[in-house]
Image (cartoon, rainbow, N blue to C red; front, side, top):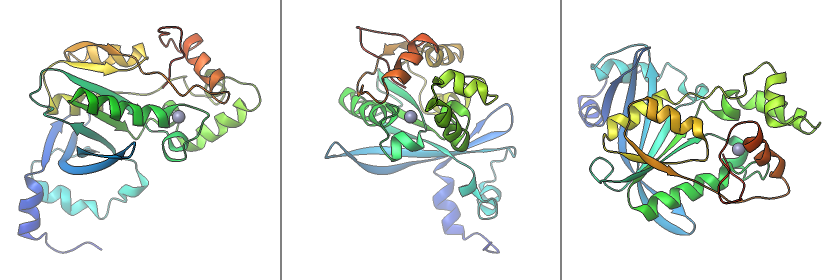
Length: 251
Ligand SMILES: [Zn+2]
């Protein structure tokens, strides 16, 4: 599959759209923006899309990086991405959402959690606000335990374990999600203050500790049903989620 030499024209097109971000372990290569028209509740909304790749290799010789792609089997590893709306770099106030991937909720529309609803709802909130970004974090499945382990956790949940107990009994910490890469990408795209869409104080904390200017928090509610009531209660009682206005939190 590997071609012998990268075409000059191809390289010159791609080089302009790649950004190198240094990390503790190497580098993040951010590609974008790419125009992405999205069907949002029946309306076509234009977002700008970026995806990023973590690598131990740190190089501004993008030809090397591009050359290696076809042999890296990237489809076996998940990459994260971000949808940006409005003039994200310069507008004064931006809404940010850090969304953890949820195969069952986002793709199948599972009612066991409220992730699918939150995904669409936060995109809508960002569009209505005028400026913002939705980070879709691909290594966060099942609070960082992965899809297969999440299936195991669901089996335990069908046998009366709550979300936290299920993860702990499988040998995982309750929540192993890390936001540092997403925050690095955020900082590369914007330095002005952001408002975070979340009910989760850990996410707010991670963002503040990174040195990012945070103007506040906007809660996200909704889609409570008989199928996820217990899951949402566990979030409040066990995972420290904030309970606003007497409704149940999501995420
Ligand atoms: Zn979910």
